[in-house]
Length: 374
Image (cartoon, rainbow, N blue to C red):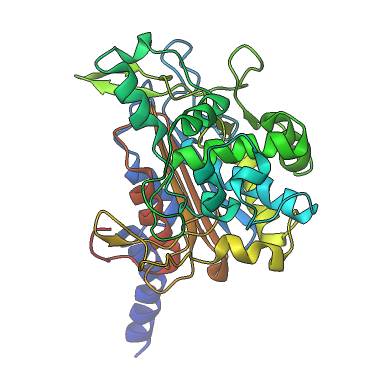
């Protein structure tokens, strides 16, 4: 009987080690997701925040191919469309200040704007129901087959001027949903017009500085510099080519913010604590738009979008999220407020699917492993 008891005790003592070997902890499994990143290749920065506590902060690969600086929590990535949550917040702060209304027509901000702007509201711009023509499509028509490196970079005020050259929208504002980078470039110009300050300066004064996001900025070539900067890359054979800037990389409102894991942790904390805007003021940003012509859809899939955030649930978990795609970069933030979970993946290479990677990481903490491919 003593031998049997001793056997049982020994077996029970070995079980945790055996289970751990078969089911490694999330940090180890996250490392496995990025195991293909060679030490001298562009890579990614990953962060997981759980119940207000930083549980994972990892860097894989290098920030650029010249210095080979290792990616870490201080490396600043171009956020691409993750920028839209900051642009939306800037607008919401102006509403908070009483200087702007969500249902204010575009022509009240810019009296010189064409007549069609009377039907386009600030709210339409925020939730992508404005119907504004895509400025990238207009540039493609203008420059035809001209190599991108020979096309002058466009800025937010240039996008506004392009919108003033057309006479109508793609559809009646508010009737349909269509993702619009044009709308967020125009919103940056709204911030400038209403606040009387350059867009990047407004972001610094009202968002980044109060939250101590000390190395976050809206990058303007020749005006400021990005510290600890990651450069974008594209695979080319067995190596990588730097592909960091394009003709549309100088716009700010739709994608021009650079930041790091350290500063995004501060941003996440502010969102959770409603530091800049109270819970009631945040409600419109997290309420899915309902176009008058029917549910919002894109590429055959249902879309739930507020102000600068997608707001559709994930396997029953409340979620606010966004992705970013621009030349050389892929990014994603996935926030699950009710679960106290945030996952950030920032990549300076285009062959990584940042949203998919972020959701695979989220699965490790939400208990949703084994789901079908996302």
